[in-house]
Image (cartoon, rainbow, N blue to C red):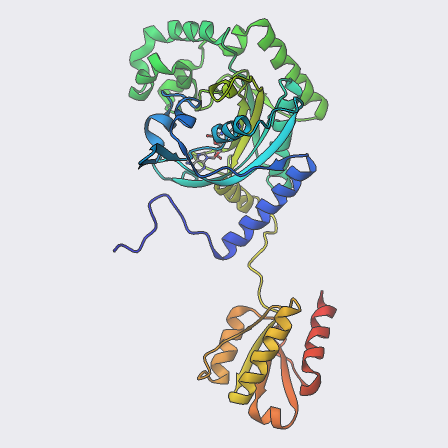
Length: 423
Ligand code: HAM
């Protein structure tokens, strides 16, 4: 059997997981301050949850979902968190209070994409959503929150872009205008965009192929074709961002790869990421709730990609936490010394002190000290059967190599005192 993880899916360990947990905890703390409560949905959903919300003509639904053929129907590993969130909101009547509610989620998502730097097949998102609120103020809150999450973990090098993709009234009119503009130049578009022309013309706007970019540069902009309500919504959003002091660029190419958006769409990118430069993105998706029930629950939200955030955090060169090293390494030489320190190690662990020792009794003192060095313990306690007979133990400070002798009877007390002085 090939001993490798599935392509595009990674094990996370060592300093990486330490940094990951620190970033995640910081972000969860910020989400708490902003009034968002956690929701956890299953990793597997019925296929319709996504096909009827994200859209049949999107890359995700067309070719990126991992399917599970089960007895009770076709299910998929979730490619994103918003559609399952709305399913849960409708299933449990979370909209019933009628006023704005804030939720966040975090966890793995699955898309069968071509793996590259910052693009995985199993990746992790933190997402935040507001339901029961159709105001531009809530869109502004989420854009501000997304920026604040990045700043909170030391990322300052990013750009925020916003757009309005209109609504069911004005978008069809815009799409027709765009198609009319592109029709005579179809041959200049990449093969993928030529396919998109009929089914998802808006996606041509965010194609990264230089020829397509050049072709769409003078295309009509969605923001110039908005109905009055959408126009006012977009204007007020910009006003709110100004009030909060949040910088965002109006960018007509922000159309997003999911069909459920209406009005506001936004994305935050970083130059530290390479080709996959979106740290996070989102938008308004009023109307999606009607796919799951009778109630129309307006909603807006975003998701950020943890793997990309970690790349940006490392590039920002902020002090990043490393895996913690033990406070003590115990190095017993001889059977009696081993039993003594074995028992003491648990007594100290129960008091919250990080102690490591090897259970291999054959190792020489020299070999044990090598391991102690590797664990980066602050101190090593050296105890031989002779020391036990003489009622003493040695404590070695690993950074200075200084050793001190201490009475065995009060060893635990001495060790506890030492670390309480340090912290
Ligand atoms: P999305 O733009 O598809 O939006 O994904 C959000 C973020 O997830 C991206 O900006 C990126 O950082 C990360 N991401 C996406 N695909 C991958 C991948 N293959 N590998 C690594 N990272 C990836 C959504 O998922 C929407 N549900 C966001 C949303 C929430 N809209 C409203 N509410």
